[in-house]
Length: 624
Image 1 (cartoon, rainbow, N blue to C red):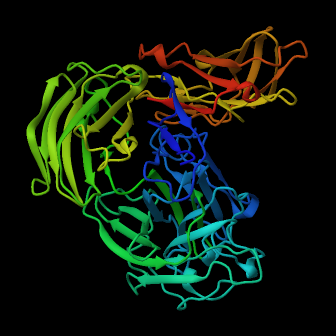
Image 2: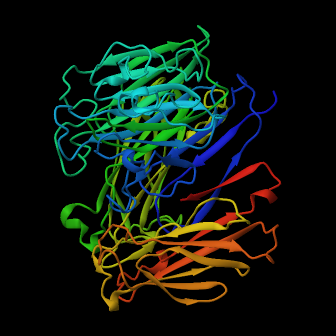
Image 3: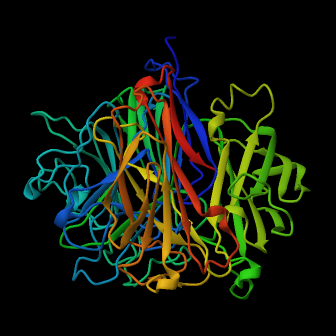
């Protein structure tokens, strides 16, 4: 064997000032079919807005582009990745810029919403979203809008080619044109609303491209709440009204020598998955692939949104953690009256193998944003329930061994999923304004041949917490690159959010917000875009910005102020070009901040000299 590829991208995510830790992405050469021990897990909740390994975009202008709604349309840390707005002729995309080996099998798991706030006439919502796998060596190119869902070409819309390097596109097609052989799409059964449709590889040549492979219509009623939500609403439908979670698997079948593509979904949180379609393709996948998402509209439209992505291997033990709340307000901040201080977690224990797995050690911890286990005066576990006792058995009870640490052992039947529900109450704001719940599964020693990929045996949920009063925080200092640009410098973006229960009037002089930026000597800071802010103090390493002319006078609870600070840091000629890294630190202050929770007022970013890295490890910032 030449080598194996191990890829770890665990992101317990949000946009807040938590302790940054480093996950190592170890990359070695991969030999096709030599994947019996390949390991990879990619986890992104998409609730925040800083995901260095997710590339989002679109054509822009009238066709729009994808963006994160955290702090803009939704409270900070409670957002979605919005692929399109509910407007005409939109297309947006997102792909995870990390490759993985294809031979071991791939699982893609995510939640989505399709809905609209105003009428699109007789179209009943359009068009849909696509999930695609593409050759990791291809330069990204988006497919067409409308019925092409960003994967297939749309010659009528001026897009003659499909997604670059596309291997398979799975369309969640509300309007039905992804299966229609028009506008340059090859093959299909005609328009079929509410359909799951598969299209094949992009050829980029004279042969047919993105050919129709298979499809199934789930409802012939275009107005049904099937793939999309067809009741006009000014707010995204809650999960108890409209919920969709999709799983897509691509697995090599040694009995046939081909690849089985299967799509499942569930319509209820934590519910049982139903198989929708399965297809056997004779097209072998490229040795390494990337996963992406796209959505499009035409004359009809919807919001198309996704969150909670999991991409991992198949045929082993894994776990997924879910929560029923997007944010919490503790008891001491008034959350008890509306039950906003209560949360329910669901732990999914999944056995993809052909044999039952016994004596799995389960450990579940509840911590703050800095990795400290919460005290029982801060968070109180109120219930532990095994929901699927027919397939998941406690071989020793799951119980609280110390406050907010659960331990026990379980047995899971072959090819089954068992769920455990943990409930609790938050009494006060934890450091870092987050409750972080993490579950870890440890199979017994000697089961390596059963559970070949331990990287998906851990899962976390990170829930924002509002403090009492005004609590200003800085989201991540976001650089335009992980690598130092010694020629043009690096562009950084800083924004201020409010995770308190009270709004703050930033338009009054006594409430002006101040942000201090500091960096090492040897760099020149040039303000680029800081509308609403004034530079009131500046020296060789520290610069103070004052928000004295805000575009919006009120910073609402849970939201981010739209006036960002963008600045460029350029190395001076005397700077040492072999500098391994440098750090930018930002701090926010405001006179009326009364929460007493100032530990979240500082944020930072590190930019590295990529040319000086001599080892094969690629560093990824992770917030725990």
